[in-house]
Image (cartoon, rainbow, N blue to C red):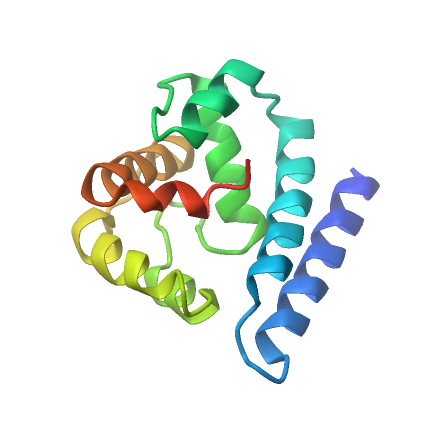
Length: 143
């Protein structure tokens, strides 16, 4: 449990530094480092198979419960989902690097639901919907 707290604190500090950084948005190489950190934090709690990971990189996402909770963990680690399973679209847009903003601008209005639901399911539905609207949504996944 202590390791989990320290991981959250480190991740929060990294995200805060990146958001406040001089160019205001993380650059592509910084995004890869963030995604790697996020993957490591969440794959430890919700291990996904290589097949699920490979398929997701090709915009084929699994209805697997562990994968759904892996996605929720990623949103949770970035403080983008609350305890009611509601994703924070405004914060997503604010954190997004410039090259990803157009994806969010397309996906968020169509795919976010402001209804109380299971966080794993909400995360999965958001990503599923996003990939149907714009296959480049796969770039958001920490895989």
